[in-house]
Length: 261
Image 1 (tube, rainbow, N blue to C red):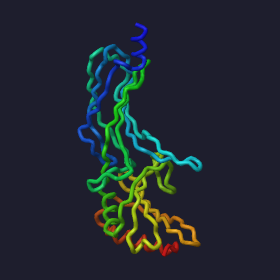
Image 2 (image 1 turned 120 degrees about the horizontal axis):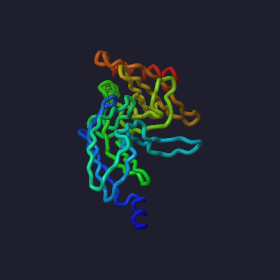
Image 3 (image 1 turned 180 degrees about the vertical axis):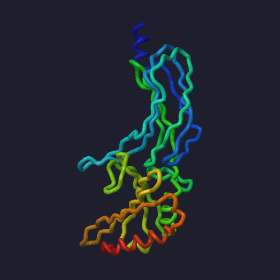
């Protein structure tokens, strides 16, 4: 009897959870729908709550050190406390709102190298370990984000990698404690002065903030430095702008103004 109670305390023979998404694809500001299936184990338990949360991999700088950690950035409780009898089954439907500033993971049907995103399900059981489940989620760009990335591609910029960094973008309203950087290799016309271009999106319900960072290539006797620029894209008028021309003009002006060429 004592051994059985020890096993129960460790979660052995306890309940299990499985989350089934109706569609694992979403966009920032959209939603995910599905059901969580909770199955009782071989003994009754008191469940404190059932919750789901969106998680991503975040790069953290601490002094001179850098490390990556999983971070949950949006959470939703699905139930309060309830008694789960042995072998019982509970199906809990949900609709989960995806934050506007959620990093994207897919572009033009391809996964962005360096990005991870998942929906974590947690069943908190009194006096026992948590039972959790993690399901991969694909976050596709908003139409406005697509327009900007398509314009960069037409200018000859090639995707390098993407990551999520802990911190805030200077001068831009931001709700989440991190931001995404999408890195590009420059085309030949910029390659002499620019090492790479870093693109950050901060999305909101009516507009998109676009932040560009030019990483200057350092010379033999000169130190490289960065040039920043940002502008706002209105969703209502995004298709009325020639973004290739706009970006080319900004990049050229910014590079010349800062002596990158």
